[in-house]
Amino acid sequence: MSALSTEQHQDWQLKALKRSLRIVNLRKHAGALVLIAPLALFILLVFIMPVASMISRSVQSPEVVDALPATTDVLRHWKKGTPVPDDAYRALVMDIERNGGDNTSGNAAARLNAQKEGFRSLFYKTTTALPFGDNDSALPAAEIKAQLIDVDKRWSDASFWQAIAHDSSRYTSQYLLATMDLREDGNGGIASVEHGASAYRDVFGRTFMISASVTVFALLLGYPLAYWIAGLPAGRANLVMILVLLPFWTSILVRISAWIVILQGSGLVNKTLLSLNLISQPLSLLFNRTGVLISMTHILLPFMILPLYSVMKSVPGTYVKAAVSLGSHPFGAFWKVYFPQTLPGVGAGGLLVFITALGYYITPALLGGAGDQMVSYYIAYFTNVALNWCMACALGAVLLVITLVLFGVYRKIVGKELTVG
Image 1 (spheres, rainbow, N blue to C red):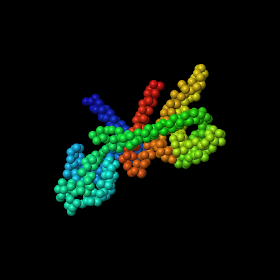
Image 2: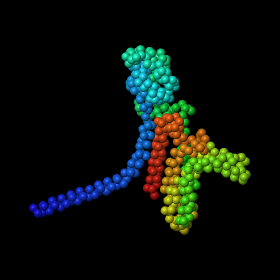
Image 3: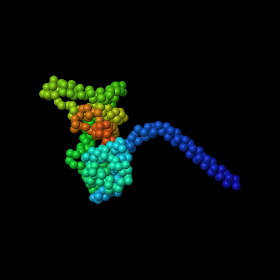
Image 4: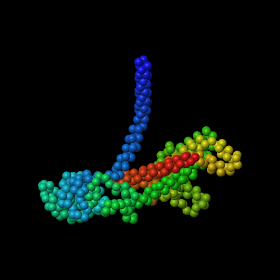
């Protein structure tokens, strides 16, 4: 009995110890969660929620459903090719009278006019003609149909009703398809838009081409500069790094304005080239792709230098010296020994510059021409001018997805290189 009691006592002590350890671990985890809670809340409010809202907004189309709920409910079950139901005419009149010409009607008219030209004027003409009587809901549907057609013959055209039926859902793929120059055809399939009707593919291609060009130029300029800084004594290297970071203390608008002064026809660059008789007339460096690339490369160059410098400082210089002492050519030793060790810095700097360049708006808008505007220009246009937030969100969502895909490809490539190494 004493041995059994001893075993039970040890078992009880073991359970108590496990319970105490579990409580201690829970307290540690709770303390860690409390410490990271402000950061997590900040990321949720500033990044995750806006991105989620943008993506959801890109597939929403609530204007017509909010303004014409009864009409869209009837047309949702209408089969194309069959006569328009009489109940749809009654529902339309009831919806318009209920709205009383408020903002929902205007938003719906604008949305439908984008699909069927003339819908805006038809909508407002009908709104002005209503009501048909003291109690339109008591009138037979056929009589309401006849009076509605008397107001405007276009209500007998099924294509106008098809436009309403097309937007009978709160969700649509229209905006996302439009970003790729695609549309829904009459049979519900996907087809390309007419030539010249849209050019978003070209805009995305231009955006990625400019960003890639800026990344290459920043790498060509930043790599030798970072290599030179990494070889300097600590005091001089810190001084040069301060000069590299100095542009961060200057407004981007000031830097762009400075480039306008430098690159204009009577600016410093053209005057210098003319004085050296290298050119016979001023070069066109403003309001074209050249000015955009020069300014963006200058602005984003520090983002390339910083990762390269941090990696190069960790590479021992004795490796190259050892390769040279063993008979390797200095360039061969640099290319085969030193450069592969700096690839993480090249990848990090290139990715940072590329992703940052994708969202540039002010620089192309001020220094570029009509053919140099990037996706961000059109996002700003749809947000501030056209007030088509759905299209702006769709462009932003597509840009985000493409960027994430490229980032995933980059991680795959880097992962394979590290595995092979």
